[in-house]
Image 1 (tube, rainbow, N blue to C red):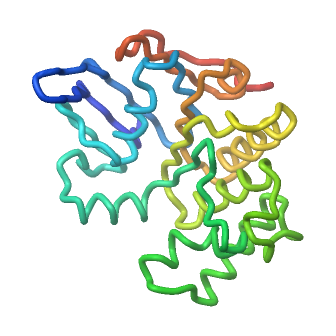
Image 2 (image 1 turned 45 degrees about the horizontal axis):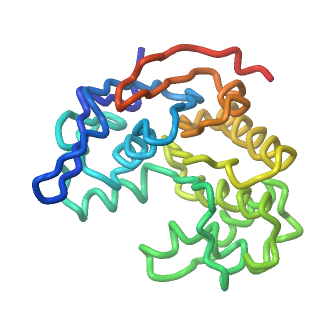
Length: 233
């Protein structure tokens, strides 16, 4: 099987003076292209830490990480930033939109920020993505005028802006009501199916996990339950 993400023997220990807290212990995880995987675990199980390592936001204490054929755990800060911007997409629980920016400007931001400005091509791409996520009538609205579900759809469009191979979602429905959460899940499944984008969705919600094609469970910093779900609901 072709592997998009290959994490081997990942350990993560946080140190505070003489105190050490081991959060991840010998974690192995492989994701293939086009997978839609739920990362489950109770609070404190290490799933957000693992997601941060996959997103190159944290460096593991030990282990190796390869994404799209490139070893990334030891990249310099500058190369990590470049890799993260070009190859990864992020969807967070609280969307982190820029409040004074329009929906279009928020979606285009991952491309516009490194380039030093918003080009016509970037604006066109952002507006196409907003239309795709059902927000054609909200393109020029500032983020402050969008509902919670609309903000999260903008966040998904933003994650797609640079055509990433891997999208990491941290509790993407945690702040939404069930109807809005289902709309966001439907959208992520559509993107996964039509674009072949790989998703790793960090969640504690069994309803979210049931919508994914595979699940991986963390308990006390260890993978204890890799497996498949029906993913059809």
